[in-house]
Length: 300
Image (cartoon, rainbow, N blue to C red):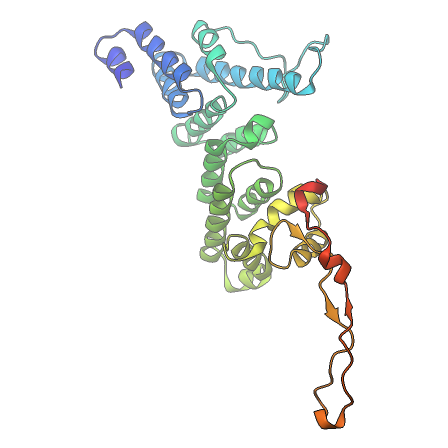
């Protein structure tokens, strides 16, 4: 990358700064330029300052996003840090120039890079987890694949079954990641359980493992189950979702209230020559079967 050449060979840090910020501005949906720029700043500036200012950018962005989401005027009361503590302040000139170029898609990369530094450089597992947990409920994080991929890999490496399960369940019910990514997490989680559980543990979680396999099975309508829960049942109760799946009868999103049934079926246990002429069949639920299909999204 030319920015690295400018910094290493030409010793022109200001030019490298400009190139990195230009790259971030021209690629607002990519997280890699932000990650590269963070690493560049960590090499050439005080690391504690870079970490503090990166978190200030995240907190300022979260505060501004929350105000916009409310749809009203900014509150007169002094805005506090959404993740706790005093109001964030961006004081460094490099970060002041960078902040207007940050977007909803790439601002969370700072969290990932700081967590990498805590974990891989400082070897502080607890500090890494505390940072990741601090932001996981924020709206800008719910759709960040880089954040959740790192968080998931981190807990997998720590062999923390409870936290891995919590991440998967949170993404299924509250996350906003693409279906393919969530299904991949479920697949890895299931494989992780199979490789890191004793036979006794597997017997206890047999139902959980089976459900995970069904959820990622493309030939089964239950692969929609975790999304149905999130959309249709605020309490995340399985019973109501299972009732919907039964009504779907293998056709996701289309619900039939009942299927036609014959009430006066022929008794085939007796000989036909011993029976009278059978009457015309009488059906139930015919009117429901003829009614227009009611799609799930119409009731949301």
